[in-house]
Each structure stands twice: as structure tokens, then as C-alpha cells.
Image (tube, rainbow, N blue to C red; front, side):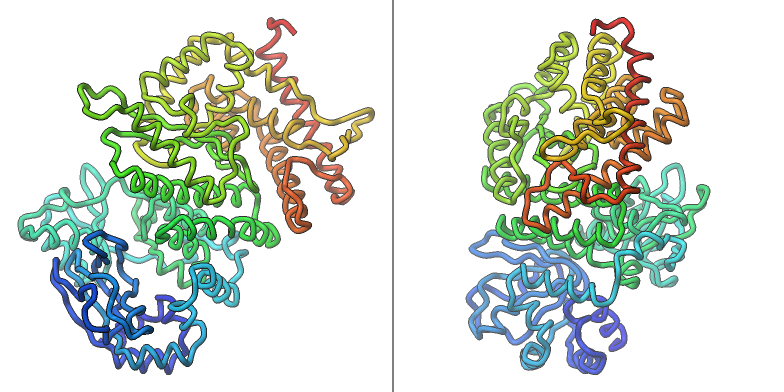
Length: 615
């Protein structure tokens, strides 16, 4: 039992920061206590606490004046404020499920606080300092370069038991215990996964008979899977995106086992996971604002370590989705009424494509299902207030406002499903400059929070309208050739006063041209590189050109990010211009080659799609 306690402490910060002798002593001092669901662990205003509580299994809710102020899970600690101040607890702790707690005696806890600065800082510092210490601890032991080479097959793939859909929760539990596994894979007509938490939450907490509950009733499906060849970094992004702790490993359709977050932590790569977890745990806008301020430093560090821009951009997008998710929850709390119909927060532009670099303007929209009959709530008025609140919170967090006000606070970008369909029909039916401009902004839309089916319905509408309005598609493609690459006589780089405009002369022609061709051909992907791959598969873009186009786009993104990071270091505002003087001769030559590929792509569009349009 002591070994199990020590192993658990060793994998949870800040206990993992303690030296082995202290960790062993602490393990021997801990008391283990079980609280059934609904039990009150301590009450607000009761006598000062005598223990620090650490959750080993289950969930605990902290409530103040009857209102939940925090929801804690495995590995979280509580009660330390009372221990440090000697005052009564300021909240009531309630077991939301059956809970197993580790109780650390007050005198042991205070000795550790007094002796070890990292341990003390975790409990006494602000969120900013707390996260800083966690990041420093990771930095001492690891390098982000591991993400570039480490693959799933390099990790320990855990073998798991298999079960049939009709097996009972009791049998599943026995299998997990017998094989020392934390989950079981369900085979059958549908594949699924059942974890220890699923049984606790869906069976035990619901007071159901485990001998009667079937696997098919409690399994999570579909399976989220990776291959042995996938990179660890991509696995971390996948876990963050789906908010899961394990993924299934498949090789040619055969299930090999699972990889868990603790396996990743064993490779000392928890820095990204720490940031994601801190975002999710944030209780107010001030915390989120601080965490958002770390993004620039994160980008600088990743870029300096050689992480590719497309990977950095995906990471930024995943983190931004987490910020948006928290902003939406805060907005619901402030409005005081849960949305009574399905809705979706859509991110547009570079965020929709997962191609953000530094400080990109926020472009977002909102769609809600307005087809429900006879509701007591005025949906348009509710979502107007809700959208204004979301935008307000995002601005407070630090997201730059959109100069064109393409934000959910603007009624033009906040509508019911039927109004959005009418708007899209209007934009597609009249290929005027203001309409093609708005379509260009909108067509990268991606669900960041809410009901994904609304995004899917909207996308099908877009594909239908694109098929019916070839003239509008042609005029949008004309926009992709409007700005020419900055190449002068003999292929020399043309420089403006601020430098070379990478976006206007290179990145925009690629992203916009590829975007329009993707929509025209019913491609659901929004990322430019993924769209190019699909266009190549469909023989829309010739293979050689598509490969060159991908490399040109990646290089232009690299140069832009390099320029932005240099400006950030100098205290300047990042933008889309690059000073050619900061580039080596080889980099300038490669930039010329990239612009030449853009010229080739524009010629392809002009010859294939625009010969009959007026100039």
C-alpha cells in the first residue's frame, strides 16, 4: 500500500518535486479514507482543518454559500488555505462520487512547506508563479525537441483486456483488476472503451447494479486512435482536443493497446499538458489573461528549438480553443441562463485553418438552432447578449479585436441557422466585392465550442451553394490572383518601406486560392496543407504543383514567424512584413523560389478557371 501511495505522489506535482527520502517519509505518514457519494468532508466555518486532502479516486465539489466554486478530480489537493492560516475552512467539501482521499497531517505538510521552496510556492504563490515554477521544473529535465522524433512506438503501449457489448460492468471490473488495467476495449458491431472512471461515474455513482449494466450502455464510442508511427506531439494535441487521458493504438486496423497520459509524463513532456490543465482549471478571467500572455513566450521557445511553424500553429489553435471554451462558460455564468437550444461558436480565418502565428485578430461567429417552435425565450435577444459577453471576455483575456468587427458581438456574425442559410444564399448569389470578401473570411469556419452538427449542416449548405454558383466561385478565384508576388526585374525581391509583405504577396494567394478550390470540390478540411493534399488526391491540382505549393506555403509561414519572433524580442509589434536584411542569402533565395511557385499557382488558376471573366 505504501508503495502505491509513493508511486501516486511521484507522478503528481508538487509532490513529484520532493526528494526521494522525503517522499518515502510522506508516504508512510498518509492516512487513507473513503467517503461515499454525498458525504460532507468538512463544512464552511467549521474548526480549522488538521489535514491536507489529496484526491486518489473520485470527484469532490467545493461549495460556498451553497454555490459550487470548484470541481476537483484525481490528483487535486484542497484544504491547504486553512492549514496555512490556521483559520476555519472557507468552503464546504462534498464527495460528488465515491471518493478515496489521502490525508496528509498538518504538521507534516507545514514541515514540507517550510523546507522545500518549490513545494511551498505551489500552495502559496499566485497562479502566475505557480505555473512558472512548474514550467521551470520541466525545463530542467526535458527538451521540446523530443516531440519532433519521439513516436508512439517508442512509448510503452499498455495491453488491455477486451470485452463484448453484452458483458456486465461487474465482469469488466474483474477483468481490469485481474489484468491490472485502467480500461477495457469493447469489440462488436461498434468499438468502444470503458475506463475505471466510467464504471464509477455511470454505474457506482448512479447506484446501478453492476451485474445488470451492459458494456454497450456505458462505453465511449467511437474510439480515438493513433498509429505506432504517429509522433508524440500529435498525440498530445489529440488528447488536448478531445479532453481525454488515453488513446487506442491501432496498426492496420488491429488494436495493440493504449497509451495513457502518464506514459507521456514518463517521457517528461508534461509542459504542454500543464498549460492545458491550468487553462481548464482557471476560475476567473484574470487567470486566463495571465495564461494567454504566456503564448508569445511559448511560441518563441518552440521556434528557437526548431519546431516547425505548422506544428506551432496547431498548438496555438488548440490552446485558443481551450480559452474560447472557458470564455463561453464564463459568459453563460454571467448571463445567468444556459442556452436552451444547440449553438456553436465558429472560429474563422487563420484560427479556423489552425494557422495562427502571433497575435492574430480574433475572427469568430455564432450559429444557433432557431427551428424550435414556441419557445418562451427570445433567442435573438438572448444570443445577442450572450455574444456580447463572449466577445467582452475574450478581449479581457487578451485576444486582439477584429478591425472589421467579425466577432460574435456583431449581429451580422451572430444568427440563427435559418438566417445564416439566407445570408449565405445572398452572398453566393451576388458576386459583389463585399460578398466575396465576407465569404473569404467565413469559409474557413470551424467549430471551437458547442454543437458540431450545426457546423456540419452549414458546411453542406456551403457546398450546395458553391455547386450552384460557379460565377461567384470564379470571382473569388479572381481575388486569389489579384495580388502578385513581390518579384521585380530578373526575379529580384521588391521591398516596400516596411519590408516585404509576405501575406499579400504569398500567403494570401495560396490560402485563398486553395480555400476556394476546396469549397468548390466539397472538401471538408479547413487547414491549407490538408486541403492541398485533398486537392492533389482529387487531381484538381497537378501533383508536382501541389507538392511545390505545400513547401512554398510552409516556407512563407517560417519566414513570417521568424520575422515576428525577432520583432517581439525587440519590443516591436509583430506583423506580416519581413526585413530582407535579417535573412541569410540562402533564405532570400528560397523566398524568391517560394514566390515563383505562387506565380505558377496563380497562372494555373487564371488559365484553368478565369479565361472568360472580364479583367
